[in-house]
Image (tube, rainbow, N blue to C red; front, side):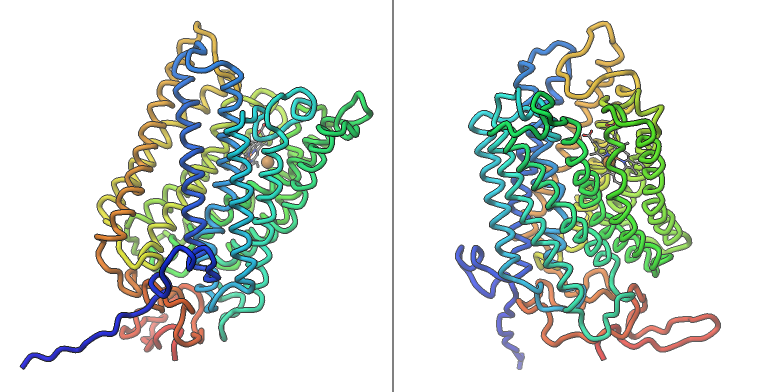
Length: 556
Ligand code: HEM
Ligand SMILES: [Cu+2]
């Protein structure tokens, strides 16, 4: 006779409760991560539409698609949405929210209600910004330079500023939550040096969020006062100094570029170690280089002011310090590369993104050195070279890391596998599309094409050729990004069910069900192993000349 065992339906964080209210009032860090994921995807879509409009306009030398005033709004709104509403929250608020507690063996973040509050603050800031765009838009550039922003612009500077001001608090609260959680809620045995590198990078990011974000909040506030009440902080006619704004703005916004890229570096450290099945080379160097970046990142803002009447001596010092800040980033690249050496690498989709990240981030960083060198920057400043530089870091870096991480943890988040073939295919399309979009821009900038112009001389035939290549690349990139959108949505319903540990890895997040229960672990895990110890429980590991039985990681 056949025996049936009736399995009770297993509850996990997705099916523990149903209904819109259970999502909007959730205190579960995993659900909040998903709320963020929905919101940032929306903002990414809006930002991408602006990007496509910019690329269409630049297909021809004439300004035949939009007027210059409309064009100013397009690139401004593209920048504001992508920087403040996509790149800054992207990895920390989604993957970080989901994984920081799970990776350290905690049930949730330290302050679950504050975590939910930070999502609402983000949404409020976002709605106000969208309102500003719909009401008439803003045309100052994402940098809001004075005196244009305070005195001359007739666009919705105040409303946009308010949106960014409010949004900043969401970032501060997320950083606060991560720091307290990492300090106080690690599972027994999870010492600082056993922390996954993803956690170290989020710790460093959180430090910048807490120390830097208040500065941009105050800067935006001062700008608003100046615009409303003409109090004379930035306006020279009233005794103010417009360059002071640039100092304040970049004092936050340079560290903010590391808010954008450090979490990506954390994802890539995970992917490189795990898909090489090797302990990461130089764990402590990789961990502390994140902290070094967080600290040194605050000392280099003046490299954005080389051509803004800053003294030559200040310029020389900022130039020197900018070269110094490249060192911790280079340390990471060297260690990732050394980890890959003689490893048994598997080229799954997440790993393809990680390898893409290393190459593109390196190009972005190296071109940063040309901009950090005083003499070359005078030529390159405010050209397309700068645009290419930071897109190599922010798109080639952060976006690729985000996509890699999303695929890697998708089985954990959704309980389903994504289709691997499509995953690899679209990773390739993204890589090709990205390079075709942005590598011509290095050349364009070098030849003198300024940023923020919607026309260029008809005689410069080669400029148009490069712009056409770039627009073609952007279309390929767009398709490469649409494919995962479709198959990830498809997989939610039709994807193969994911096992608890589909990649056979030792990390704590893989030692619980997919999707995890609301409290993450049935029992609090006890950590007995270093990070990235690779050996399945039943196998023996060769240590030097000796074979040794390996206990099952983490549980005992
Ligand atoms: C690691 C991540 C990095 C990110 C996310 C990043 C991001 C950016 C961004 C957004 C800008 C444009 C600012 C604007 O709108 O004018 C920029 C410009 C610049 N970056 Fe980077 N950067 C990174 C690394 C570096 C490095 C390693 C260096 C040099 C050592 C560097 C040097 C510069 C300089 C000097 C400029 C100013 C160019 C100019 O406008 O004249 N960057 N970067
Ligand atoms: Cu900078």
